[in-house]
Image (cartoon, rainbow, N blue to C red; front, side):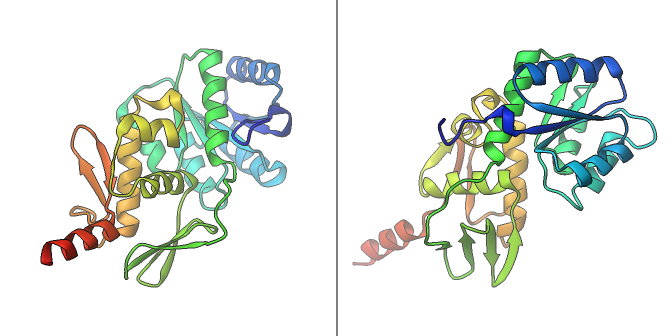
Length: 249
């Protein structure tokens, strides 16, 4: 089995939905793939099962009584970084953005096909599983910014800031190609998976998250530059310094 493959037999999925037909549909298709599945039917029950059963991923419906999916996710993110896929009958862009801003890893609109849904679960698990990092843990960008590759933290002016798994993967792929423009489709495929090459909104949102953490002024970025209509580029300061020195000679 390759390093990026997912073994469903080792993964526990928590499905949170107040509709019995929906939970049965999801459970049946996930179990056919070999996943272990547990259920919760409201937000309070979901939070308890995350605490006691430690699932590898949570499928969380938005429209639930008492405590909706957004409120449940907000509380969940205070105590856990477990991957979360949101479910909703609405396809509103505002709902999608709100879920992602609260820390969801993906968003699926009902109705959906079983094949696509299982594919998205596998894609989220692939990108959130541990990645190997070089022994040389600290990558120094300039006097102000460095990246701790082992702890997945950015160090900004001496202060350590945690990165979400998706934020780290995005930053890592930009750094791997420092000085070069990386197209939107390439970043989406590398960070989220090939199923996400049209989800440019995801990419823009996470670039915004990264800029808020590493830039002096996120509205006037120094590190992550936008090449409008094409992609993003992480500035290669070493190359720029060399070019400046050559021009002075």
